[in-house]
Amino acid sequence: MLNPLQGRSRLLPSVLNSRLKYAGLVSTICLSLPACVGVGISLPEKTTLKTDAYRAQSYRSIPPQITRTTKSTPVREWCGITVWALVVPVPLKLPVCTSYSEQSFGKDEFENEAVLLNTQQKVPSPLYACGPFMMLGPIIHGYQGNALCGVFPD
Image (tube, rainbow, N blue to C red):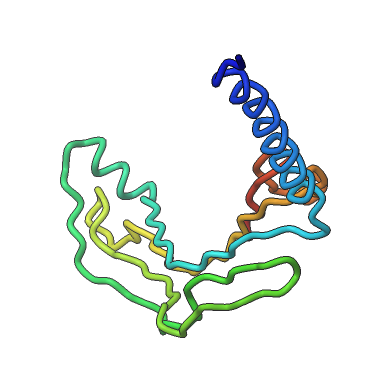
C-alpha cells in the first residue's frame, strides 16, 4: 500500500522548482530593462543665511533686532512631480510655487544699518532614478547613489 504523504513529497519540490524559475525569470526581466524609471520632485526650498553682523550681535548675547525687510518680486514657478516611465516623462505640476530673495536689515554693534539675514526661496528639481545603467551615474557631477538607484541634483 502507498503512503499518502509520499505523493505530496514529490509534489512539493516541483512546486518550489516552478516558483524559483518564475522568480528568476521576473528578476532577469527587471534587471534587463532598457531604460530607467524615476521621479523628479520640484518643491520650494527656503534657505536663510546669517551675516557677520548678525553673528557679532549673537556672540555678544545681544538679540538681533530686524528693523525692515526688502523682498524681490516673486517669480511664479512650476512645482510638483514628474514621473519617468521608461523614457516617457509624465509631468504632474502646477504653477503654484514662488521663488524670491529677501534681505533683513537691522542695527549692527556700531548702531549702523546692516544686512542681518539673507533669505532665498527657490524650486530645485532633483531627479530620483533607478535602472540598470545607473552605474554610469558617477560620470555626471553631483550624482549621489549606488549602481542601482540614485539622485541627480539640479
